[in-house]
Structure formats: C-alpha cells, structure tokens
Image (cartoon, rainbow, N blue to C red; front, side):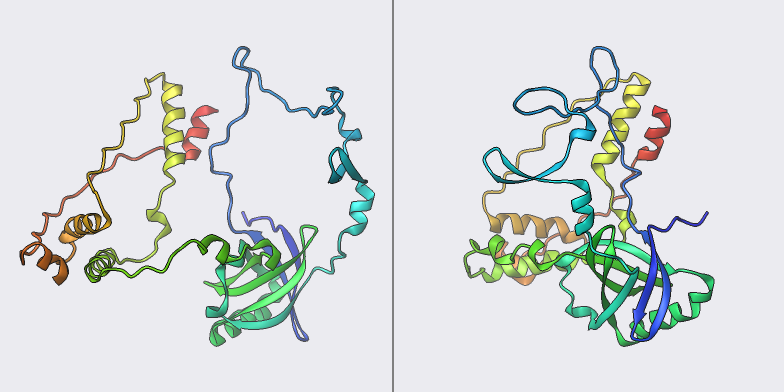
Length: 301
C-alpha cells in the first residue's frame, strides 16, 4: 500500500510547476514505547494540569498559552489570536536558488522527507527536475509553509526521486565557536600522528546503515522478552579497567590491535625496537540473533 502523504503542493522553478507530495522519511514507530502505570494496581496513569498556586485541577477549556514577562506575570494569548498570526500557505515550494552540493553546511539540516510526484501526470516534469539537479550537481533551496511554520527546504536528487530536508534557521543553530572556544592549539608529536593515521587507515570502510544497531532498543527488547517468559535478568558485568596511562600508550595499543588489518607504521616499529607487530590470526565471531523492537511489541500484545 502506498504511504500517505504528509503534505501536498507544488515545486516551482521559474515558470515550471510540478505537483509534489511530501512523505516522512524517518519514523520512531518501531521503537519500544512505555506507559506510566500504578505499581500497586497496574492501571495506567493519566496526566492532569494543576494551578501552581491553588493546587486545583484545570480543565482543558481553561488552559491557554502565556508568554512570561516577569515573575508570575504572563501575557495571555488566546487560540484565535495565535491562529491569526500563522502565515498563509499557498502550498508552493518556490525555488529561490541552486547551490553546489558541497556548499551546504549540514549543521543546518533538520528533518528529511521524501518528495515524490503529486500525480501520474507530473512524472515527466518531476524526472526533468531530478535529472537537472543531478547533472549540475546542485541542490535547490526553497521556502514554503509546512506544518504551520515558514520553513526553508533543501531539495536534492536521491536515488529514483527527490529528498527534501527542512533546514534550521540561523538563530536556531548555535555558533561553533561556543563549543570550540576552549580548545587550545597544541602541537602533536610526529609518532602519535603516524600511529593515528595508521589506525584510521586500517579501519577505512563504507557507510552501511544496516551494520549499525540500536543496542539500547535491543537491550529493551531482551528485557521485555525475559519478563514475559519469567526468566531471571542477568546483572550487567562491570567494564574492565583500562591500564592505559597516557595517549601515546593508547595509540600504540590500538595500533597493535589493528595489526591484523595492516602493518604498524615505521615510527611504531622504531619505538618497539624495530620489531614488526605480529599479525593476529583472524577469527570469526558468531552472534545470537536478538529480537527486534517489533517482535517485543507482538509478544507484549
């Protein structure tokens, strides 16, 4: 069954207009979700709002938004006043510029969406725009109203279609200098740099999202399964203490551990008396399959 579009509108480039549909590219529906329950009765607990001063419960009809301008002083905003402030939407992703892919700062990326053709008749125009972006190696920057907010959207070719990523505004992204201001300029020892480069070289690879696992979700699935089956839950083993006393020792040990994938660098051999690091015999590691979050949900139901 085809997915349901979150938004339908038009992608406009000059006088070229293409009906498009926006689909959520990511989802957290497979994550294990918990409810808060009463330990004694086992019944689900419901949240309720109370007046901070009187302690009395407040019904939904009496709850409004307020902007704090001082201690215990709020400007009340009625729902119709907030609705009137929302921008009008013409359902048009109007392209304002085309930018080389390498010029995009990914710190501004917010959330990805798949952008598909809005109708069968739109496919020719859609494919033309996709191939134009791909041929020129550029992305399109557009703006529209999405989900009651004005959003800047980056559109790029993605496989057989287009992907649209909402972008954060400049005021939403903190300056990098705030995070890096305490990093002092330091000169790195040549041996340490050579060891680091060697370790990186032996671990080069490609990104395959299927090889990365959400270990927390898997652990939760194991926990739910054990509780359903009435099994004892083993206590977590403490992490072994590290004997590394400094950065150079850590680099040397890491280089030795990666010896099975490549020879240690010359500086490392020199430091160890000219002896080559012996390659470790490769081993095959077997892993027991772990239940997915979906499996845990099915068992729970």
